[in-house]
Length: 140
Image (cartoon, rainbow, N blue to C red):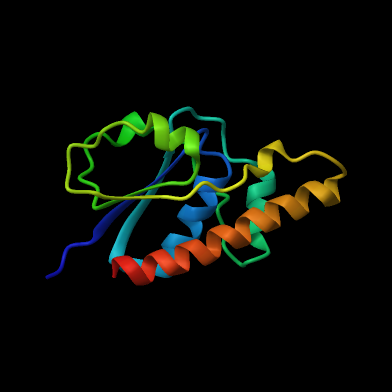
């Protein structure tokens, strides 16, 4: 029996980008992997990230914002950082984890009308989706 991959998506606050990536990777990898997301801080799951993912029929309402230290015991196979801040401050995981990094724009910093802010969330979400699809092809 083949064991499941352990995948960690790491961001600064574990509220938007890492949550979106976790949602896409869970959908793409199905039962082939245990997908986690965490932050070097915890800011709670952003309600706009939840709404944005619902547009892609992916439910992340039950996700929680977790600190990376909570997963120190997990032997990760893949660690994906989705912002430069997390990449620079990423703790060293004593494992054989393959590390991937891509800096996505932070939609939580978007300003303007609600419609303009949601457009930024959709833009970042779509970038993350394309990246996750490409990454899954690489790691499987």
